[in-house]
Length: 638
Image (cartoon, rainbow, N blue to C red; front, side, top):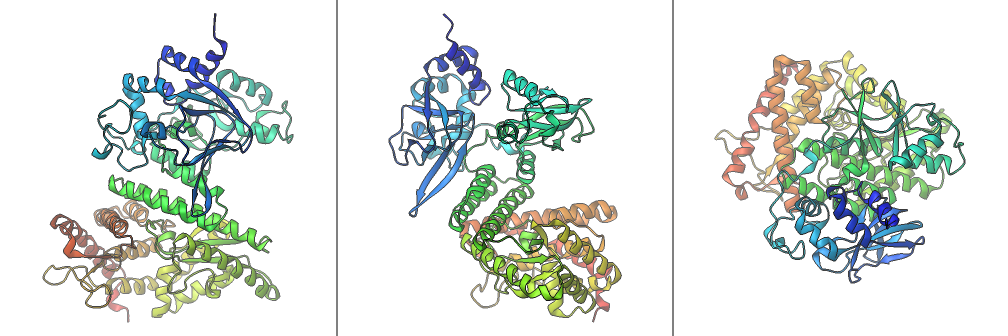
């Protein structure tokens, strides 16, 4: 007699890893032995430090929150949705639960016997490889000697997976996705989704993607009564869709999801909405990389209720950075991921602060990041540099308006300080009335800096011309950007003053090719890698970008744009970009090792290879400074 329940369970499991790696017969054996469990909202499944169950679990319906207690507080670590596994690691490691699990809403979960799964691990290497990479351990290298023989019961050793850093690989997406037209009724589209056991349907016209409808759209827009089930799909679909070409890497997909806050990416022939749809890349496709990854961290950020929780999450981001650096992952990718996390933390700090104040802002405003965060290069816990611009108001309203934003900025900078971003020693923060201004006040200030470039104003320009939009009304940010480029085009001699300051920064090496180290003070005999090596490259990229109206702030991106604009000088710009990557990676590694900002390096503790590697970065610095000297007639600047 046919086992209908087991068949239904099999149909569910086959779409989720690692069960999608198993043949149907093996999967049916699992389905027949699964325990179905129902939990009401907030009901505990297991608690932190409990003995492990005989089952691990997969969410069939609803959502399960994972939590951890620490310092007398309860932290939400993750929310598991449909198809997510949890409770596996303690069974593999034969240890108590490191976190608790409870139903976030009414939920049904499947319990899978670990004893049954042990045999599957032995017989199906692809499953064991998946579990090693995804669930077995939170350590950086699960294949290290100290873990051999401990990851799985009855397994003495498992060889390392080739190229196990999945983020650099081409993402596997679902080909030939299910589609419908914009005029299809929501009811019919939902039936198609149910029949095909999918949680989304792509809306197309002439096979070009124009939108997407997901389970979430049906829950939040139909289930709440905002729309009728007989309405067309176009009424509730998300549009436009985010598209990528067929060779998208997991890294690119991760960044796109972080940036656009979407769960699905459409894959087209050329990566735009103007060519044929060939696939769909869903959140579950990317969730094969488990543990301490950007998505789990950003989920936690959204749920954070206070600055202490944000601090805990940022600590996890530092561990993520260390893992990337240790694996020698391209620094450009690392900066993008960590910058998105830093941005998410700042946004959450702003929202929490507005909630504390109890009233929304009186006019539109924009929170700006400056310095390394503005350039999306803040990998370490350095001090904060930020500013705030608000919409122009009548003179009689200016004082009261500024009072609100100074209160908001004070609360935000305080929270960022708790997170670990120290207050700026020079007080270049939005909580300082000097840097909390209206659009007109900012424009006037920029104009004054450029027209009357005294030493203080040049220093401010170096810091503030890397401002980047973080939160609020982006139109205000755009106005400021246009104003800066407009003023500089009218007075390009100002770039000569900036160049002079950059060139006056002493070269990294002395006459006898020795490192120029600090002569006295707390860091005596140490090399200042930030000021002597990284800063000249950053400053030069900024100056050339201002010359060519390049809106990008990131140093690597600036040099790449300059290579396109000035192909005759592409060798110089490329060498600068490569040197900057090496220096930034070196500084980050030093900072993580020494638990500081990585600014100073003890040359005597470096290997000969590392010293040579650093010295190889100094020739591009000399070359780009020579270019600045000639291009902007620095010798003529008083």
